[in-house]
Amino acid sequence: MPEMPVEMEQEDVDIPSRRALITGATGLLGRAVFKEFNENNWNAVGCGYRRAQPRFEQINLLDSVAVHDIIHDFQPHVIVHCAAERRPDVVENQPEAASQLNVAASGNLAKEAAGVGAFLIYISTDYVFDGTSPPYKETDVPNPLNLYGKTKLEGEKAVLENNEGAAVLRIPILYGEVERLEESAVTVMFDKVQFSNKSANMDHWQQRFPTNVKDVASVCRQLAEKRMLDPSIRGTFHWSGNEQMTKYEMACAIADAFNLPSSHLRPITDCPVVGALRPRNAQLDCSKLEMLGIGQRTPFRAGIKESLWPFLIDKRWRQTVFH
Image 1 (tube, rainbow, N blue to C red):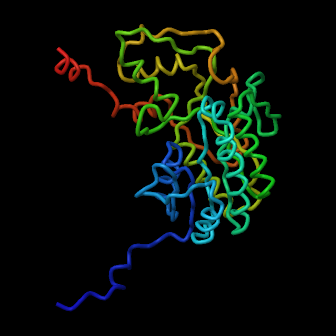
Image 2: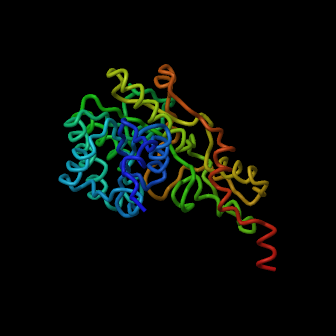
Image 3: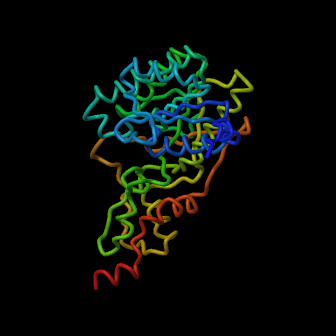
């Protein structure tokens, strides 16, 4: 039987002409950003490190040659830099490594992006603010309370110094479709919620704005697409969910979403003593992006249900197993 000509097979596998490179693509936010670009007519390439293969490129962002090579080979129009050490207590305990990734690697990435004319979006945090006078606009003076916030703020400066056309996108506490509950400071509470035979203390002091990674991903894509048409899109931007909740309130909302009891959850209203200092209320004012017509917000209940149902230990199932 004669072989099929190779060209025939290619016709409807149209590779989009717009290219996006996502760092930290193995992480909670990066996976959502990769998916968002990939499903919206962008040719997206993700890179990761420990969890990269086989889905993503394995790149150590501290290896400047490897970073140079992938950017020059792929020639992205947009780079979304999600990779970071984001656990405040880990940053405090390993400050040098955290600074290398959050600051040095970010500055280098910005330089390389400028070299190929790529639009860089650097993901930053509400923790650049001290949380004493919310809500915070992009023009408000940062004052990070912990080393995590300091390294991310230094990363912002390194990015904007090396690439004046770059964007910084500050976002708060994230949740979404996790691979493990510990991947998000929101979803990690689900075990405490489900094990209602044991009372659990929950922070009811720090005011948070839980934000769905799908919404952040959509904002990144909208920002990138607007930038392709308008070079004035640059500088600092804020995005956040708009439902203010303490961790105690999130835990109660999670319990309610799954019709679980919440009477075992105990609100703790004192300022936390252990670990890195946290801002009381670092609410981000998102009106700058909203004025550009950019945004997306999933209601917390709907988003948390979608994220957590795979981790629900079904009551009926639990009874058949343990009784």
